[in-house]
Image 1 (cartoon, one colour):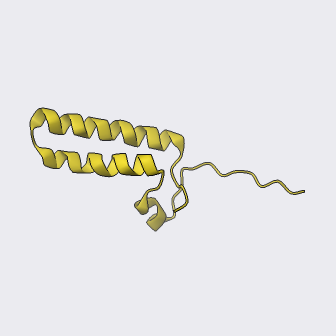
Image 2 (cartoon, helix red, strand yellow):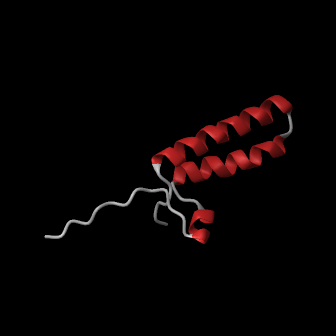
Length: 67
């Protein structure tokens, strides 16, 4: 799995995951935590399967030096 999420994308996903967990905690409806689990896992891995499916990458490309 190559990384396809940039740091900004990962931070936003992690913050959304926390918001979903908080919403699940305060409303006592735990199915709300499912998107939080998905967003949290993808933010920690740095890889999103949907991005791979659609060919999207927010990870910056490293410049290749020619010597």
